[in-house]
Length: 310
Ligand SMILES: C[S@@+](CC[C@H](N)C(=O)[O-])C[C@H]1O[C@@H](n2cnc3c(N)ncnc32)[C@H](O)[C@@H]1O
Image (cartoon, rainbow, N blue to C red; front, side, top):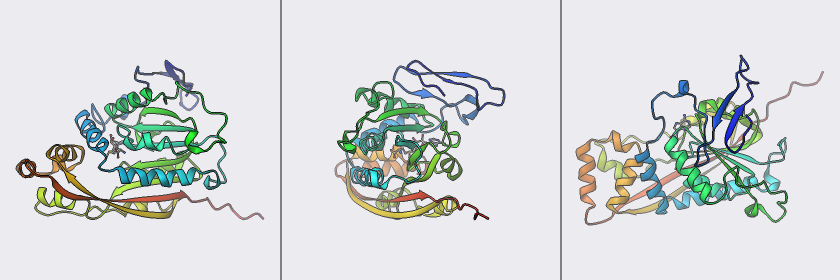
């Protein structure tokens, strides 16, 4: 893929028939790399309404402690002495998969990477992210990579690449990224293993047991707990779990906050409409108290054992 300001062009070298293809750069600065045949629906991923609700809810700061924790851990990993010893590229490339409208992604950009690939299957999400990145002058064609990073991670110039793409078909060269984050987003062990460099990092955030318990009790007759750890077994062939962090935050939500939270989570369509209405009516005059509980997992790609020399 050869990126240019108006059109990206794949050179066909990886296509069985050497077919080349142009991908136009949208005026907001993103590139849609999702071919029609990979779309399982007309508008895959999160909808415009859910993106807007999430943007309002997150920008109100309710999950700020989680964002701070993720970025602090990421900055520690990207500090020079913690970078993978086998990193072949001189630049630090990070992939945020299922980035949504970019509440976490924009903060990640400040943690000391050179390029941040912000990827989501939802076009409305990527449009929002691209617009915000463009306003900050951080899009891939707006800046030149910094040649001097001696002054520290926070002063690095990061290039953000907003891409509409599926996690299952990442348009990235094998072993080309230093780290991947999946914040409440899909986890695809094979695809992640393919694009991640040796000893590369994987940061995952998930809801913990008891997340938004009072809200779920009000919405459902019986509450099924989040199965937080199952995905770790699927990652085990490729990744080693380094650390796990738990974080909890008390929330006092207005009716508008609660309505946005319902719209941005799967609870919106799983709950019965009358339960949902009753919950919203109950907070018309008071705030609703609940607790957000998260787990952040930091993993590292396990080195492949080399056959012993004869
Ligand atoms: C719960 S949201 C999380 C968004 C963001 N990381 C955040 O926490 O604010 C999950 C995101 O994953 C995206 N998504 C779902 N399936 C995907 C796939 N196969 N490939 C890429 N993104 C996907 C959705 O469009 C949505 O934006």
